[in-house]
Image (tube, rainbow, N blue to C red; front, side, top):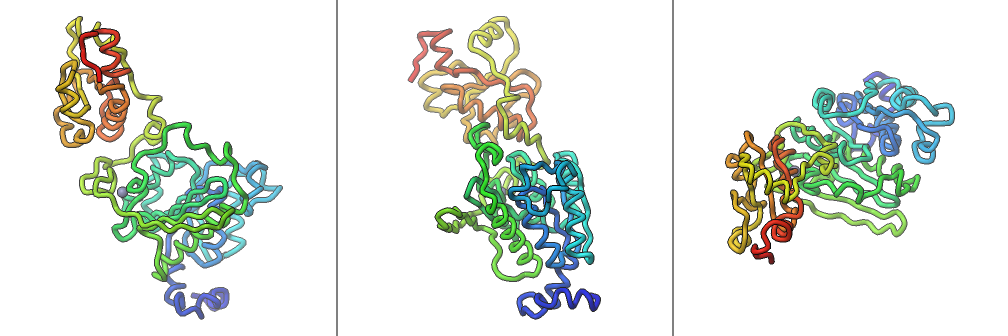
Length: 371
Ligand code: ZN
């Protein structure tokens, strides 16, 4: 470190927890912040000021006047400019001794591994589920630490995923919420101070991990509601059945996260009358029942029985060369099975039987026992 750097970082250098050794580690560190929105705006100036030597910033968006209520690195004259461009300038002004790489792009399954592989720690500053799952899976596949925060109105969640064999985001949230059930910040509103608190806490975790100081939040989820100031620290365990970091991972490469989070868009459905017509016409169709054996005994419309809970173990029995129609009692479990087969196992020949065996009994075979 140069004499000017020694002067600049003096208050760190005299902290025994950081010292010259910790400051050198900060200088060597490579951190990627995904998203230059509210979280990035709070995290990045502190990372830069602390002397994190290599910082990547990624965002595809331009600055809008409605960002200025909480994205404090931008000002009136920034409106209409690229976020990464203004952010890079601001960070260089804060600390000319560090290197900034700008990625003026949207993170996708195609570019994520290429970008993330060059960094040690990834900070998730995104605001949507598809990118959050993408960041998580890419971090697990590349063995990168994922410093996570999410904000909603007055609430924040904070954790460190995939650190020292700890849990990942999917261990905590294996499935995304149903589309439309969780409003975005643009729809629900966000308290301006909230991303400031959450983002600086992310910077805190990042600096702790780099300098090996304190106890990072791996295996823990911290939440706080800024209105009541009631903090909660939950212990979270690594899930051995996690599809990405578990014992038998099924996600071995990045998937289509838009489809994963909005699955209804792509799930094929078939009505009972259509299925009956195609079966009567002698079409080769594999029928798959994903209910439990006891339900199958009570009544069934034939086909292979593989309960949803053991689907993973019997993938080899499901054909890829003919249409596969999946059914259950009402069509709900079979929809989950269709999504699983498509997203995790690459099937594209599946269809969900709409209304399940109940619809079959109502419209095709009234003698069938429904329960
Ligand atoms: Zn996991």
